Amino acid sequence: MTEEKMTVGEDIVVSMQYQVNLDDGQEVEHTDRASPLEYLHGRRQILPALEQQLHGMSLGEEKEVKLAASEAYGERDPEEVVDVARDAFPESLDLTEGKEVAVRDEETNESFQAKIVEVGPEKVVLDFNHPLAGEALQFKVKIVGLRSATQEELQHGHVHMEGHSHG
Ligand code: ZN
Image (cartoon, rainbow, N blue to C red):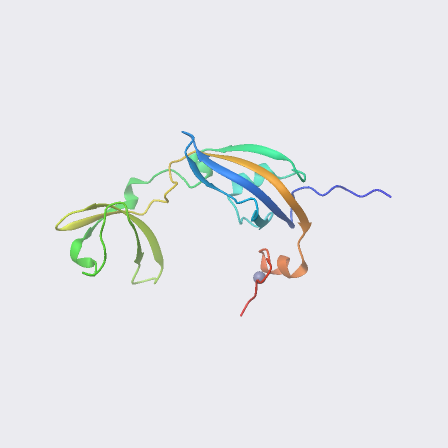
């Protein structure tokens, strides 16, 4: 009896350990040995360019993947850096340069993360670019688990970890 070896592909739940570094070597993040990242392959739960590179890998395999900024979180957009009137912020809000603030669009009720670039007496400069925009990223990936997705996971388009529930 032959059994086809499972590899990273459509509808497979992939567990992986990874480390991400910027081009200059600075570490962005890494998974803990005890809690690898689990995702459903083919559903764009991770960066599509990374997902593509992982396709076909087998259990235990390691790979280094380099992504250009355009394949990761995009180039920096100067138009995403905007001036906001100082009095548009509540008095109580701590406006410190370098801090992150959540800004809500009154019309769409959507919330956006922005970084405070500059605080002046009249205006505050906010940067709405993704913190990793303009950065090429280097991933070191190791595949530590592969299994078929359940029917329910395929219907939902995401992985059900232990304790996952839909209330
Ligand atoms: Zn679900």
